[in-house]
Image (cartoon, rainbow, N blue to C red; front, top):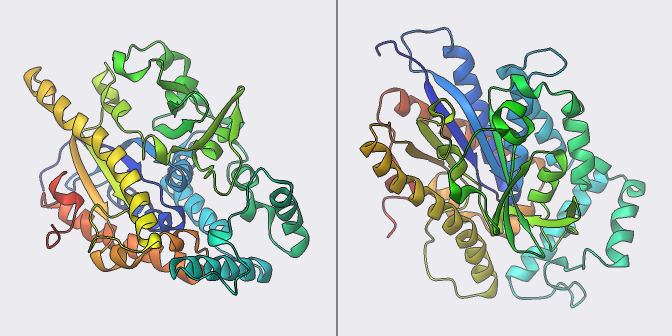
Length: 392
C-alpha cells in the first residue's frame, strides 16, 4: 500500500458487563497493530486520537487511555496500555477460591431465574438485594474477610489499584481524548465526562450548541466518573459526584460518540470511528420467556441509544461534505454470530477465568482478521456492518 499519513481513529467501547472481555482482546490487537506498524511507511497506520466507553466499556477505554497517557514526565506507550488491559483481566476474573464460589453461586441463581424456577424456593430472582439496604452493605463489607479481594468487589478500589498515578497525568501533554458516559439520576441528565475539560487549552475551544444544555452535560474526567459509568443500580448505589448522583451510562449513551465530531478544530476530529459492539444488533427470534425479554431489553437499551448517535454522525457527514470537510467513516468490530447469539444477560455477570478468557481470545482473533481487511480497504461501514448478513 502506498505510504501516507496515518488514519486518525477514535474507538468506542460499548458496555455489557463481563462480555467486555471481548473488547479487551480487540483493543490489545489494535495496540499491537499500532506498535508493529508505527515505523512502516508502506503500511496503513493508526493514529489513535480518542477513546470512549460506558460501564465495563469505560473500564477498557480507561486502561488504554491511561497506559498511553504521559505521567510524571514519562511518556506512555502501546506496551504500557496492553499491560493495563492485562491487569484489568487479572482483576476482572475470579481468582481466589471465595471469588470462584461467589461467582458460581451468582451464576446458579441467574440461570435459575432464566429457567423461571426459583432456586430451591429460597433465592429471589437475580439475587435481588437492594444495594442501599443494610443487608447489602453487610454482605459487601464481609467479602474481604471471606477471601474476596476488595478490588474484585469494589470498582473504586479496582480503579485506584489500576491507575495509581491518575493524579500525576500531564494533562496538557495528552494526545488521546477520553469520553465516559453516565446517567445523572435525579435530574435525568445525560452526562459525558470528558478529558478535554481537564486541559486548560482545550477548555476554551468552542463546541456546537447541541453538546451542552440543560439535559446534556459535559464534565471533567475523574476516576469517580468511571465508577459512575458502571454503577448498575441493581448492584451498586448511585455514585455521588459534586452533590449529584449517577447510574450506569447504558441508559443514556452507550457510549458517547457525537462529541468526537463536534469539535471546531479538525485536528481533533477522527477520520474513522471504530465501534466495538458487544450487544448484538439482531436476535434470532421473538423473545417469549421473561429472561429472554430482559435479555433483549438490555441489548436494545444499549444499541438504540448508540445507533441514534451514529445516525446523527451520518447526517452530519452530509454537512461536512458540503463544507468540503472529510466525512467520518463509522466501522463496527463485533463478535462472531455464534458467540453473540449464545450469550445471555446472565452471562454478563460470569467472571470465571475460562469464560472471560474465551471472550478475550475471540476479540483478539476477530480484531486481527478485521484489521487485515481494513489494511486492504475491504472493511465494511455502518450501518451495514452492525448486524449479521443472514439475519433480518
